[in-house]
Image (cartoon, rainbow, N blue to C red; front, side):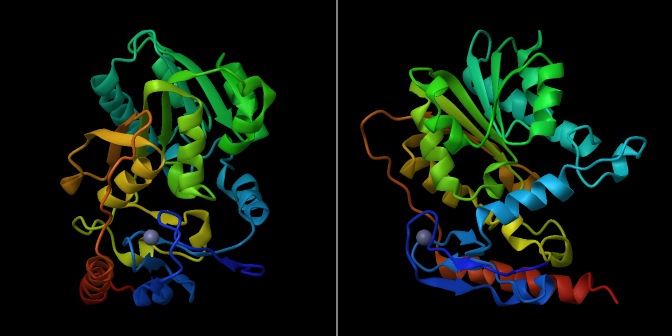
Length: 298
Ligand SMILES: [Zn+2]
């Protein structure tokens, strides 16, 4: 992958420039490091290309699923069984936390719209709104009868039609790890929620839990497409700085998912703790050793 024009960004959570490289990440990514913030322990790909280059990758490569292709073999589409399963988990978890019936829900990075269509259906009974940058997905959303804005969360926050409109719930499912700034998106989301409103963040990036896959399947040569690697503590930290108090978290120690629900806390600073950088670095070193000892490919 062409890495021209990359910039070293400060920590997205605490803004520190004191970042340590994870040595093993470069082993699997062709030399493109994952960084750990020495101040707050947040793992992130700090060396990133301009947003336009990353968005082009998404549009050109990642959304393409040829007709007739077996869904189980597709690179990515929300119709894949594994993606459908995790969306059902996120919907159930959210509904248990906030009771969706009659609530207005904005899905940020709504993709092909299957998640919102589920939330709008008879089981959950919410009123959905989609924020989605892809025009091709915009067509799919329209076909599903979902009201949509074409653009990013930040675009929507600045758009005239957002003025005065507030939602009960915002959802980010397997999206926040791919944003240009996770904190920026969460802050913008807080701005379009009612006081006391809730946010759901569901992700598969998990740190400081048992290893789930060999590292060659975790790191690749497209590091800045998924720049943010969350632990429960770093995600709670991002939510806190954006003005959310974590109200619900799933049992992530033995699940493939990390799912948090936060409540918009009006007017008070929410405390947070982050992770110890040395523990995060040691976690990756042990994962690397395990991969090399047991899952090394020829
Ligand atoms: Zn930091």
